[in-house]
Image (tube, rainbow, N blue to C red; front, side, top):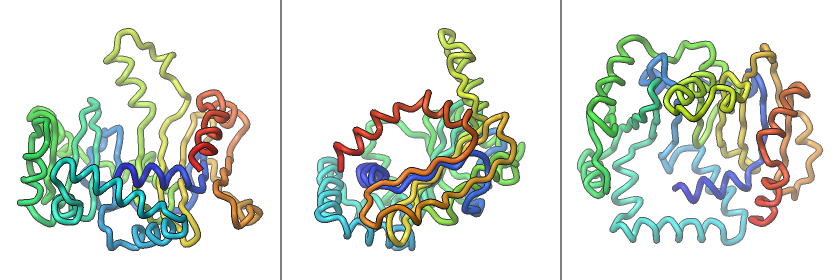
Length: 283
């Protein structure tokens, strides 16, 4: 699955959307599993019969040899562990995988498996010890009992689905997606600088309040959309309008929007030339 998503993302049509606005994604129901002070929320659609995966399959079929190569790589990787995707992994994951990173930077994975037995077998196959519990009808997986207890306590204090920054971040993304992520960049920066003595707040500061991103399958390609808010940006809305000028046989198109200051910051943080060369080498 990771290889499949990585290659799809590399071939994606990309839209960077500073501020809020965009395609008005719905806040998913799984957001009620996220504490109000969580710093990361991510969800991955794992239902192969979902409209998004059906569209992705059709896009991959248009690239000669890619679908077969990816399927072979996934099958080989799983077979080395004695696993099969359809038989062992998909029933254990269910239709959606949710990742929550708590305010103390502890990861919690939430599943609604189709088969508890398959999940038990998959966890037994892991080399690492995983703590398991139940939260609101979902299976919650953590690294330690203390992490799971702290997560439950944080949930009791409130959830994130009505948080303005969270809603704005998802509002910048497409209605439907294969996967999405929202990050409270300001909170992550502060927590990291307090945990690592050798790292200062200034060295981590990116000038971004929050960041969101999603990968979605469209009728004619793949779309990677990103949203971010900077302190000086206010409520900037941006939607790409120049894609209609992109040739039909283009492999990649990138659209930027926002203030020049935001673009300068992005250019300073991202090796655009290196990224372009990597995409050229891959394609």
